[in-house]
Length: 370
Image 1 (spheres, helix red, strand yellow):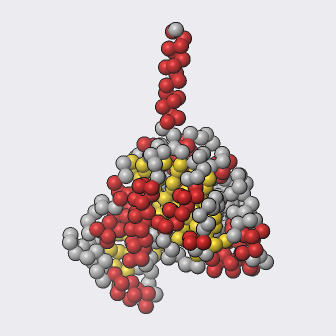
Image 2 (cartoon, one colour):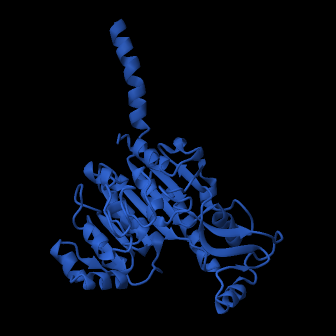
Image 3 (cartoon, one colour):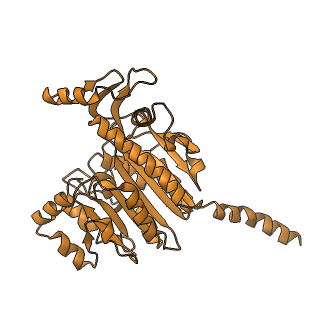
């Protein structure tokens, strides 16, 4: 009897641990969506601070954005750190620091998406950047130069683990078509050869689809509708899924960038209502951007004069401009970025973190070991 009691006592923590694991993980990546961009977006959309949904998530931390060789990173190295737990150099896509950009391949780094594929989960990538852009590419491809669009896109059809990304929704059709053509390939023929027709709208996705690729002409598609379409497909898998959603929030065009940050916030809120309690939602940025709140009065329009100031700066061929409330310079910056989370494993998000820690947050949420 005593042996039985001891055995049960040992089993209880294991059972609770299993219950606390995530079935699904959704990673939201605001490209260049640093803390100052988030603060500005709240002021722009709501007229006051701390009104965004993501600012209400229960677990908040700060992550550095350093890469293997630079204090200020680009998106490929920034995202590589997040999805592989290993730092590399700017311009390199999911390869180790032994890579030399454009000249030498480095060690392929296993991404969280590839871990999911290996274990039979469904996987998805949504981006209002090109589907071969640095952020989405870092989840499914490995290249020594983020500019190798044709090489990157072909890897979606030749995965290292599982059967590859199940849902790909994003922009970049003209650029990808041109890159493939230069490599002697045809976009539609490539998709057909692998039994994966490349659609041009969400409406073309068959109701019973288990996989899909939608490649838009522009980046103005409805991100929330894309999330709904991806969720309908990915949630069919009883083993679970991994989904990455990127929204470009660069504020070199100030109003457009803050509007996109508001779109990202609405996407996080919508997804939070869409998924169940078995899903880890994780929001962060790959790097910050040089935008600073520098003045203004409560109750006044936050972006008053921004459009004229930006137009004047463009005429004068200047990268920077100022208005009463904001100063903007067209450059990435290296300060820590926000990490916000909800769901199983979210409690690991706290304090000052490394960007590589976020990989372990997701891996541990699934209950996997590297």
